Image (tube, rainbow, N blue to C red):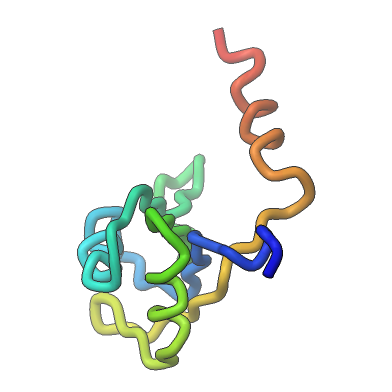
Amino acid sequence: GGQSERISKVFVGGLAPSVTDQIMKDYFSKYGTVTECLVMMDSHTQRSRGFGFVTFDSCDPVDEVMKRSDHNIDGKNVEIKKAFPKGTGPTKYMQQGQGMG
């Protein structure tokens, strides 16, 4: 197996508007150690865009999460996919930081 198969991050879609980073972290913590949890917010309205990302400390929890298709957070079924790194990965985050100051 190549390095690309070991995904420790998942995409979570179909989130209820009430779901916060903390609620999502609480939910996924039962599968493993969550190192980062992020609900994507609309920069103008500050409302949830209905999706987010969860990063674990290893790829094992991701496999556990993907075994189930009935994930329900805050009373709403959500869609979960492995978050494959697009392109070269971290460089896009580096670019975001430029010009901030």
